[in-house]
Length: 69
Image 1 (tube, one colour):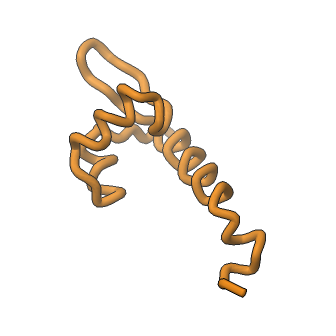
Image 2: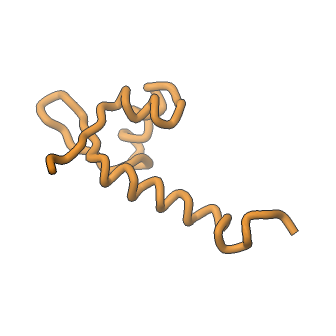
């Protein structure tokens, strides 16, 4: 099965954030891994999902049962 790639616009829509935020993530190294093809930026869906899973794990939500004590 071929890889699925997202554009910066796709990523912004996925998270409901402005496109400018996605570009700021790229500049600061805070977002998902990406590649450049010429002037074009693309995100491999597998890398995006891995980045999402890292963010989820950092919340501690699953570790404390998901609710406030």
